[in-house]
Image 1: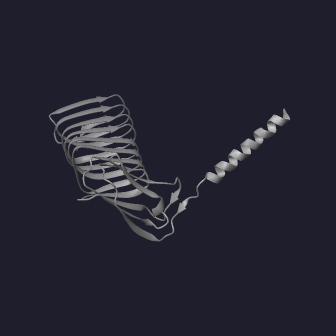
Image 2 (image 1 turned 30 degrees about the vertical axis):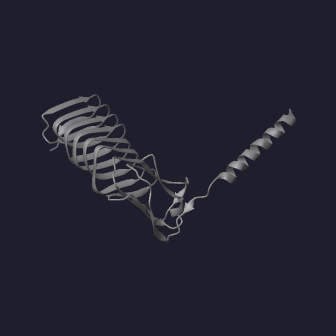
Length: 240
């Protein structure tokens, strides 16, 4: 029995040592802020998976500009693959001295996703037939959109501020997200809240709301048809 226990202990010790040696140190900010320009491949969608201020600008050619510590730049990945530009870090632990700023110039764009705590703002109008916006985490978006079909999803505690136009807008909040879309002129808006989300929307033709939880919806635009189903403590009422 003793001879069996000793080899097992040795194996456990070796495995522990191996894990320790493979653990990467944190990438620490130096305090020296630099700017780096990158030319990614073509893309039509963006995924932000790191804490950063992301600014979106329409233009003739795709381009990425990163502003952060010179020691953080090397661990930021901006890869475009299968039409998706992913902005991420290559290390689990990254500590810049301030918030990283990433400016993306896009030729065409129809999808923006935040996974984590990033913040996205647009300096132009995202124009496409179909646009998808999503936040998984506690990020924020402030965007202008011109689309036939717009889908907005917040899973977590994200905040979305929208303006522009959309023929149809589908809004889904399965968490505690908030959407300010009173400045988004839509024909038809559908809202589904299954948590404690809040939405302020504008619809001219039809508004359909389903709340299962503690959600609240305020609406403007005097839609000719308002359908609502509330099975929690939520409310649906005109903006006053």
